[in-house]
Length: 143
Image (cartoon, rainbow, N blue to C red; front, top):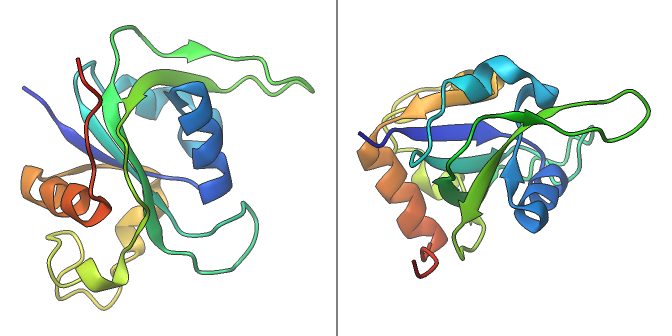
């Protein structure tokens, strides 16, 4: 059964994953990626445009389907070897979260709506995921 996930990373980091066909979360930790299975859907939320900035970008920036295979490590040099999973990214637009706050189960009626996003990866309902896909005008690639 397909599960739906929200991953969190700055937009500049998400763009690297879009270009390379992969995702990574929590600064490359393996544990969170082991929760995700091939065929699961993932959407990225980017609190900032650039990692380390405080620009309040607060938008969904990518959506896709996890490909077959297990998490793997990728040597980025300088001793940094993060874990990744391959993803087939949809064609999608960025979508700010603020217009969706009262529609999404994980944020509706919550003054502290960003709390759950601090964990870097969490399971979302199919309904929330559909709202996000619609806001992003997501189109899955032809099979």
